Amino acid sequence: MADQAEDERLKALDARIAAAKAAVAGPRRAQTDGHKQAQLAWRMVIELVAGLGIGFGIGYGLDTLLGTLPIFLVLFIFAGLAAGVKTMLRSASEAQSRIDAGQDQTKAAPAADEKED
Image 1 (cartoon, rainbow, N blue to C red):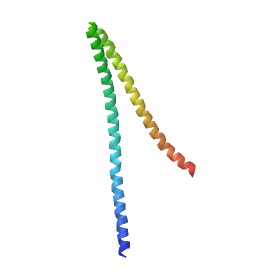
Image 2 (image 1 turned 180 degrees about the vertical axis):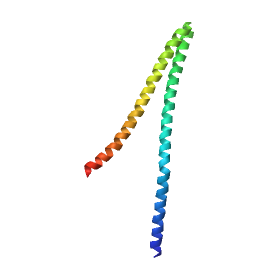
Image 3 (image 1 turned 90 degrees about the vertical axis):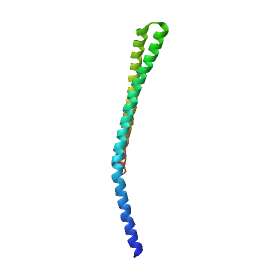
């Protein structure tokens, strides 16, 4: 009799623990997704600024060496901007492909279950 009462008490405790874990797991996932999006946004901004900075450095260096101050500076700033935008677009397409792959997996799982029935 004592064993049965203790088993019921442990089952109730397991149920409460599972309910508490489920309540906590929901917001963390949403918060993690938000962090991933912010990380992607910062990565894209840094890529753009790095492209501009490298273009500025190369252009200014060439202009200083050759004595033609504004020409190469302007050209390489535009080249750096183009490289930064290209890198940003590549990062965005990688992120989109990951999102599409995740959606395809979630859509494919129920379809596979329906085929088994």
